[in-house]
Structures are given as C-alpha cells and as structure tokens.
Image 1 (cartoon, one colour):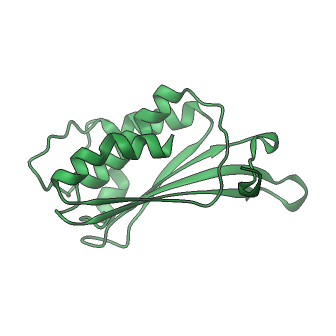
Image 2 (spheres, rainbow, N blue to C red; image 1 turned 135 degrees about the vertical axis):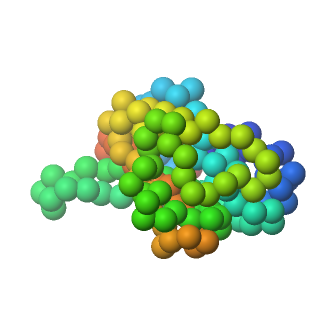
Image 3 (cartoon, rainbow, N blue to C red; image 1 turned 45 degrees about the vertical axis):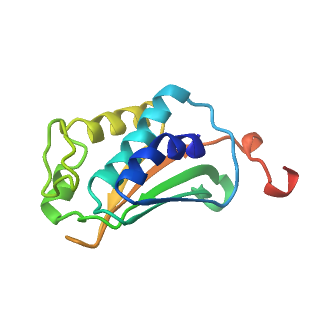
Length: 162
C-alpha cells in the first residue's frame, strides 16, 4: 500500500523536484479498507509535498512496534510521513485534525486546501481502530505525521521469509 501511495504521487513530486523515500523495516498484512487507507496515505503524502518547498525530501517510514504491558503486548504498524516543510506552531498543533481548520503553513506551489483533509484522515484511521498524530519541533523545522494501526500476530511476515 505504501509503495502504491508513493507511486501515485511521483508525478507531483517530480513537478516540485521533491524526493519521496520509503523506509520499510518489515512487511506486514493489515485488514483494512484498502480504498480508505489509500485515501489516508495519499492525503498525508500530498500534504507533505504541498507544504514543503521545491527540492525537499519526504520520507515515509513503516515499522512494527509492540504496545502494552510485557505479558500482553500487541503489535501495531506505525507509519510516519516526515517532511522538510514549514513545520507546525503550538497553535497549529491545537487545531490539527479539526474540520475546516487553516494552519499557519501555506502551500508552496499555489496548491489549494479545503481544511478538511486531516479531519478526514483522523476519522478514517480511528474507524480502523488506530490513531493519528503529528510532531514538529516548530516553525520551519518540518513535521512528521504518524498513523498507528493494530495488526494481528498471525499477520506478521518475517522479511527473511519473503
């Protein structure tokens, strides 16, 4: 899914001379609505490109993590979309994922924005039993948006088994 979402955005990235890089530590299978999850990934990747200047790099990472207490640890896949864009202020962080919210960052290539994308992302991720959040060290320091989704132990694929 990640490779497909990246491929869908390659032409747009090329127009802005941006680089899309995928770092996937381990493959896994998720039971998700593929169309809805593609919408989530496409929105986050296109936002990273939209709010990053020409020539910047967007890194998409995926890794398996375990949550919970030692005796009852549950696997989750954590996807991070990191940009070298305008970053997020404290005020932006308070408004993230709200409907029709406009943040302080502005598109860098005359792209449009409705202010609905992140609220839709949050709703779709939560409908899949996951969570979404963002981290940024502040203005002009880029941002990373994270999506965390639960997976079953039986769905883990060991890289050396491929």
